[in-house]
Image 1: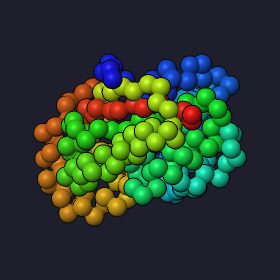
Image 2: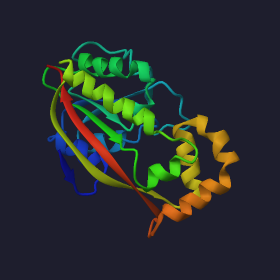
Image 3: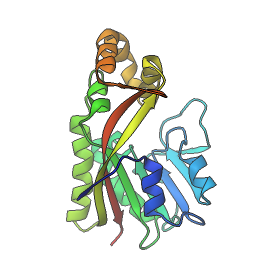
Image 4: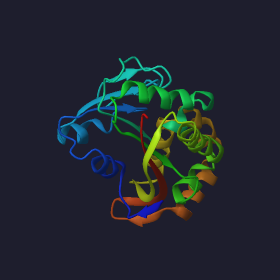
Length: 222
């Protein structure tokens, strides 16, 4: 497993799916649809699916869980889990990976990009939501799918990404919008959260930057 230079999720996707033009890509756990614009600009077709209603989505998103995708077999040229597999209920993570395999054509890549439970961003987030265990569960689900022969891993590596935010309040708004269950603790631990943020975030021309190590798995159906 190699360590790549700092980059972002789109860089990873563009590398794995090169060329993007003409591919129909399923974005599982699409959230507000942030990947829709860069993928379509690159010539790909984008379909997003997410079980959670998002205020003011950037693109239309199909409402469905990853464990029961409302699409036909082999409908897509690629499937993505970008920071989303660990948000699937733990008991359903394996089913979500199996569904991704079902709806992709033979040989199509399934790209799983997950945060590792370390780095400045994870340390700040842990004040209100320690994801160490659930991220480990997502990694275990990938490893189980590979070891059991349900998926084949063609590539795996780590890289560092930077999370940019204009200020502390914008950071809180973003992490709560991703997982609304964080709101109560964000309010109750506001002073601790802000102190941790100011201690770990690096000043940047864009406001602040928080480092986050990432794990990439490129998979396909057998």
